[in-house]
Length: 244
Image (cartoon, rainbow, N blue to C red):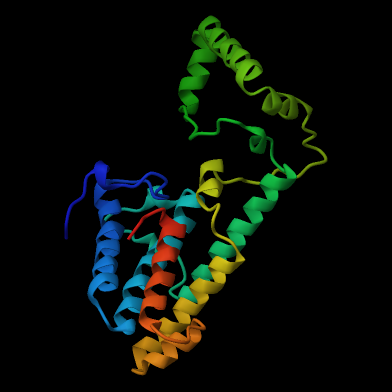
C-alpha cells in the first residue's frame, strides 16, 4: 500500500487521524481514479467507488460520535461495532446527521452558540481537586481569565450558557460543529445517489449486464459509461472535496 504525506491531503478533507489511517482511503481513491481513467467496465467502477463510500460512512459515524479513539489493532469498531449491512450504516449516518443539524438549528445545546468550537481539553479530576485545595489562587486566576475570554470572544455562548434553564431544557449531546460543517454538501440527493450506488453494487456482484447498472442511475442515451464516470467523480468531489 502506498504511503502518503500531509501534502497529499486536500483542503477540506473530512477525515482526521494518522497517515496510516488516511492512506487507506487515499489508496482507494487512487484505485478508483485509475478505473475512471482507464476502465471500460462499469462493474469495476461501481465496486471501487462503493468501497470508498462504505469506508466514509462508517468512519464518519465513529468520528462524529467520538468513539473512533477506542480503536486499536485488536479492536475494529468499523466492523465489530457498526452493523455489517451497508444500508443500516447509511441509515444510521443519515439519522445522526439530521438529528445533529436539527439540534444546531434549534439551538438545543449551549455549545451550539460557539463561534470557535474546537476539541476540548480534559483534565484529570484529581488534578482539578489538587488545584482547588492547594493552588486555589492560581485556579481562580485561570478561570477568571477564561471567563474574560468568553466575554470577549464568545459573548453569545456565555449569555446563553448563563441563561440556560437546565430544569426546563433537555440537554442534548452534540457533535463537533466542524463535523456538521464537513457534511455541508450531504443532503437528500446525496443519500439517494449513494443508495443507487449500493443497489448497483448489489447488481454488479451478481449480474453482468451493464444496462442494469446504467438504468439504476437513470443513465440513458449515448456515452453511458462516461456519464457514470462523471456521476461517480462528482460524488467523490462532493463528499471528500477531492478532485479525481
